[in-house]
Image 1 (cartoon, one colour):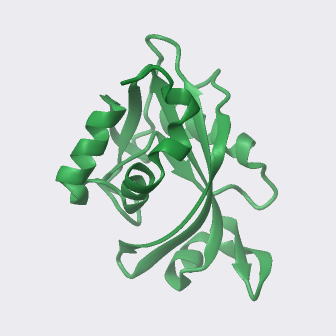
Image 2 (cartoon, rainbow, N blue to C red):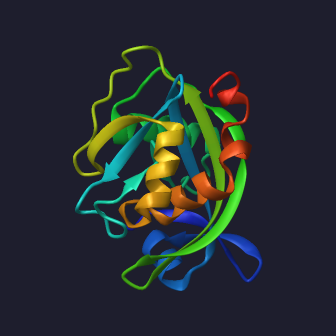
Image 3 (cartoon, rainbow, N blue to C red):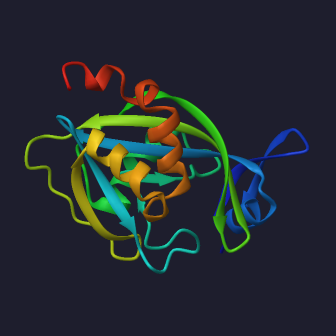
Length: 178
């Protein structure tokens, strides 16, 4: 059964199949999480089997909430499902809307609730191979430089977050960092 996600159709929030949402480019709800360890952020390389943007680097995790799911609950759930991370309760960092082509004639038009969490030193990460091919910790400013230098290695949304919304997303989290 295809997952239904909250999307706007004719001005009303409606449950719509995830693939249909992306084929039609419908505006829909999403959640993105960034896990930090000091100045470093955990990023993931999307699994080769993903139906869009496979093999590209993205933020710690991103997803769509279920029809009746709160964004904060969704953030905690996907940290566990994608990366095996438990015990973190990300703080709400704001909302971003973007529209981007993601390949294969699919469009992301997302209204994204963004969350940031501070990991404990030595945070355990156990990626789900059907979701995540690889993970790495990278200095946030080094990541921004990588995105600017070689944007095609990164998902459209990560490029947008880092080039257009860096201070808005990470402002409080980055106090005292560079």
